[in-house]
Amino acid sequence: MGKISVACCQLALRVGEAEHNRALSAQAIRHAAQRGANVIVLPELVNSGYVFRDKAEALTLAEAEDGPSVSLWVALACEWDVAIVAGFCERLPDGGVANSAVLIDAQGVRAIYRKAHLWHEESTIFTPGDRPPPVVETRFGRLAVMICYDLEFPEWVRLPALAGAQLLCAPVNWPLAPRPQGERPAEMVKAQANAAVNRLFIAVCDRCETERGVEWIGGSAIVDADGYPLTQSLAGEGMVLAEMDISTADDKRIGRYNHVHCDRRPLLY
Picture (tube, helix red, strand yellow):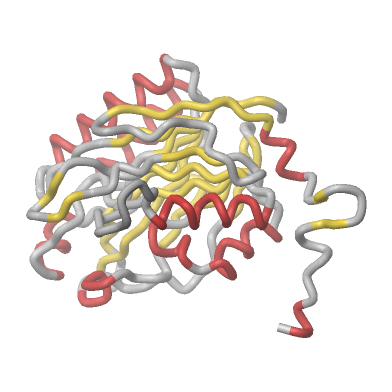
């Protein structure tokens, strides 16, 4: 696989309004596909919204992996022959709830990832995942999935990189926090650093606007394997789209003598 187009669809979702959120996601997927996107990334917890009052509310909005949201995305992936990565509030078989992301292509559901590193009050609502980020061979390249706060752990990003991932897709909900004037959000800088130290493309899809008093960064970005953004950030709803030669992520060399993975010395760490 050579060049592909990747889109991150930055949305203003509504907590508790599943039908609205599904319609918004479908509109975004169709628009991205019409623009030529092969891989389409949506934010974290697209179906439900994020700022839950408690676990009971989350459970009322959670869906099984064959629920209406994932089923809609499967149909759209088949219709447009695209790969879709989207966050959703997943109802677990044991009655719990997970902050999950699904990877879908024209073959159907290829992987479901459950967020392993829970942020802030998420730990009172969600069951943490206990499996590493999946790496899936698709016709658009080897895609990996993780969610938001997972990106804060370099060793977690290293796992799919070592497993051969070329593009890491990350649905996120990054809350806006104070920062020095003129500085970019630290979360965006960390995504760039993770891309550079692994020579791995990363597509981050964030939210925008405000939900129950929480304002989002709106930091959707597509980063190349050298750690540089391929897109400009958005002020509100919209899409960032970038073309990349995904095969360049297979070359882990830096110059003549160095290799970002082979130069590791894990026995010393």
